[in-house]
Length: 249
Length: 294
Image (cartoon, rainbow over all chains, first blue to last red; front, side, top):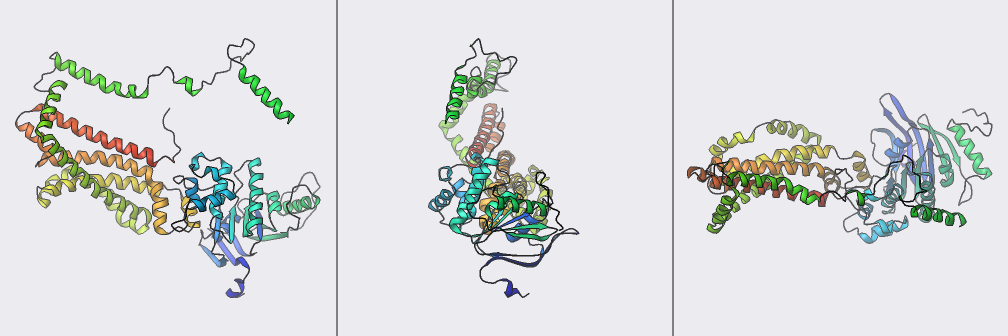
């Protein structure tokens, strides 16, 4: 495995032999991962399995690592909480960090994509949870990233708002086709959105499923349910309704 | 569609029900009084605020008017008013006021720059904290009023020691509060800034300082208070013009009215400074979502 070998053209993320320790525990233990350009990957895992840690490493927020990690330099990140700067108005939050001269027009274009143009002048404290999360998404999208890192961005939203936000992300991805890594613990969300679903366990990608369901997807089809049961199984949750198949992982 | 209609009809019906309706039995439910109605029988805020000072002023006037207090030791409001008009007419008040204001503004300017810069350095850099914080915390406990004799020996008796004393008094409250504010900045926002590829300057001016601003303004309030205090000390101990000089001079010629008048002016100036900070808070902290009193 050579370094040049892992930065092939056509990849947005390439990770080899990644290790991240917290004390004695290897939260990430020799993990390999490739994400192609334009690919939508969902990363599932139980709480504390290291999926958010992995995303933080890819977002260049955690450097206490061993192994080789390559990511696209143009990244957008959205976290579980919107993390808007409370002292900047919404539009100013969206263009924060862009080179000077990034103006209202550009902010409005990004806000328009998430349907939030009318809230540009508001303070973050006056936004609803869904609006704040959309503003955060606009901020991640405004720089046209090649890679979008989403850390449970819908986790704190109510069920109705979550459905809308998921549809919005699906739309935006259809339009821009950037690579996406979506960290989530919601199996249905992963199945609705992703090309490929990874299940993380014991610090590595324990299972990988390609999702070929036709888009736009909806819950409830036979194929969807089969995949859902399978993934839940990998996550160590057996569904009570259908008798769970004995799997030997 | 049908459900929507019936729902809105139900709401209409509900809102038309009034407390007077005999058929509306609310049992022992508590009424939530709307805000508009709740404040009706209270006195206006401005009137309430001016009531205390007005009462004091009346008491003062009455007790000097009817000889409860000697006019020689504590002149009444009327005497002070006459003195004030005299001093304005002679131009001596304006001159003294200008000189004092100048000292405070310059001293405060120096103190502000030094205090905030040191706080940024020690708030942002580990090495800055190691080098700066401990000495600052030690120097903070020094009663700065005691520096006056030393400053006179070192810097003479012209403007420099007065400005230095004001700057000294301003630096510490600003440093302490700004440093605390910087360390209180939400770490998740700093991370967000890093994912947005903020440069160092952008991080300081768009994230760290705005985040520390609430504390910085608290420090500003304290420091303006001690700025005036320092000025009084510096001017009364070695006076060459300014309000403090007026006071010292008045003591020698036994003009209690001038002394009290100057003290009141000091107090009013302090009050104005406080108002300025409040205004700043209102403008600069509009983004905050805070409890602002019931």
